[in-house]
Length: 462
Image (cartoon, rainbow, N blue to C red; front, side, top):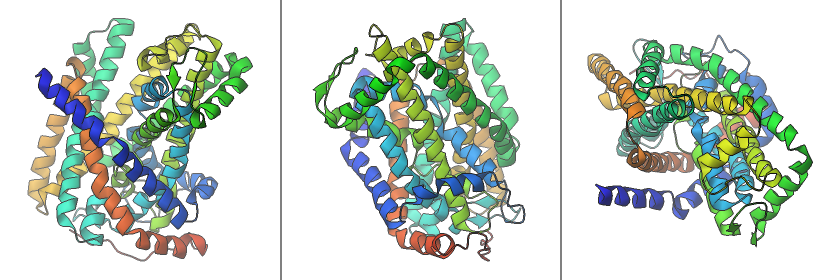
């Protein structure tokens, strides 16, 4: 078993190595240039995200779709993941993580556009979409669509379920002494109560939970940055210098290189915001929107909030805490995060605990929907077969929540990383080969100021 675990770890490191990083970041940059920097429209995109489009086709509001996508995206990677990037790549990794988020907004925009452009409608009126439909309907590559759906279903049980449940149970056990079995049962029941109501139930819970958990965590970060105010300028300079200058960093950091800062910052940024992964478009397709570009803009704000805001604040908290307190252990990501928040007496550990628990729980909810839509796609057009398979999937998903709460998951983490990387490849193929379609739709609705125009396209009924 040790040999198998070692092999899986090596495969995981290989698939998330430089070729994947270059492919993802290259797609981000290419789509940014081809779409004339859609990041500059972030203000308009944020306004659209909170504007209801009731007369448009779709299952949930644009904000509901965004909240569900954010719920799945903002997870433990935003906290411990950023700390891991800092411990391995030094303070410069924070800047590279942030840069990745800025460029990743263009890819997230592209995914959202294709999701609405190629979505379909079931006989009972639900909207289905995502990379599998873009691959099938846009590129006529059914085999790639099937591969994407398979890897999405696998990833839903890994990074979207068991590892998140494990993060919750381990934290509550180590911090407050709660039984992991009891925590597992409670979390499984809560997830069950939400997912039985489908996308509308998930969207309602996420619409309420995401703003609270994000605001609570951001407020905690701002308080810690206030305490570290005297070293904040020095910390920002250290982050910028370390991102572009090969030097041994002071303040408790080990010696790092530009290559290390770049690699770990980009990799963690890509993993955190999921731009290019193909997960968020699955729920974007369910949004009530009058044309693909409106939802594309809304989708792009997911990467903005996840990486440009939350990950950047986390990185600043970590680096400024080390500069202010050189005795902090910065060799392990989890230890570094805990030490940084412990500097805020009483409240700091509580903020960290609530942040990890709510982030992980919301990730489970978001990925339950992604996995269900992937399974539904693989089930074919039979309504009866879909109902049966979805019922089996939901049962297994709930069981996996409990199992993840009580088991050791080092191997599952690496398997999930592999599934995520394999998801990204067919999705990026769709984005790059359909970039002409994305550009034409963008020109029609965004560049020609026709965002309020209805596309007039009726999704085909399965």
